[in-house]
Amino acid sequence: MTIKNILVSFNGGAPAVSALEMAITLADRTGAHLTGVLTHGLPNMLYAYGGHIPQAAMDQLEEADKLHRDEVCKTFMEMTSSRPADHTHFLDIYGEADEMLMETALSYDLVVMGPPEKSANFPHMEAHADVVARNSGKPVLVVPKGYDAAQFNGNVLLAWDGKRAASRAMSDVVKLLDSSAKIAVLCIGETKATTKKAQPVMTHLARHGFETELICEKSRKIAKTILATAKEREVGVLAMGAYEHAKLAEDLFGGVTNTVLKKAKVPVLLSH
Image (cartoon, rainbow, N blue to C red; front, side):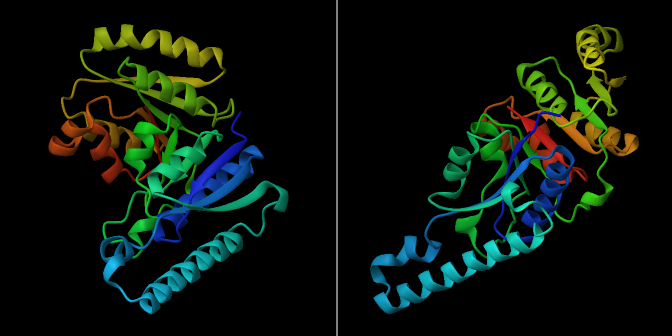
């Protein structure tokens, strides 16, 4: 394990709570520093109507916003109270949530976050996993809302398609594991071709001391196959290359990454 500096996006919402519980589990296992970060701009109402709102009302909105941020920090400290104080940190950073999270992530090994809430109470404090995974240059571990970190195990499903992002995912997930972990490598396509494509991967992982298993599936329903295999193997982490297609195509027509994020029941490690 070489993860020693974990950043968790924490705004106090239910997805963020699940992400923090997972981040604590990882930090305790690796002896890593754990930093919570709340990135935020102005409340949306001030952006939209700031020029038309009386100063007294603006002051009230800003005060309510500050009180909420203080409560978020308090929740973080309570949830991490059993951790070493010198390995636990919290940042409150003003600025556009995604941009500030990506900038902060540059000096960390891993970003842990939850999926965005559809109807967030504080949308200006909401960072988006798809944006961060595409643009931060860092591996992003997306933890499903309500995930029980106590059930986490070190076994991994690596979705392998032979592309650059999948290679990044392989390198990133290895850093999370100790040599006792088992890694199942999933290739989707014609068996002979996928077996040949995956062989160097199996050799690489074996040289790192991992027990490996190659799974070849012919299904055309890639996302469904990945999710079903992760469930069948009862893995702790699903690792995959993310967003190989242009953002517009993903947004308009959906894609494997988006589908997996919406439906995964275990943490998904995204590398781009």
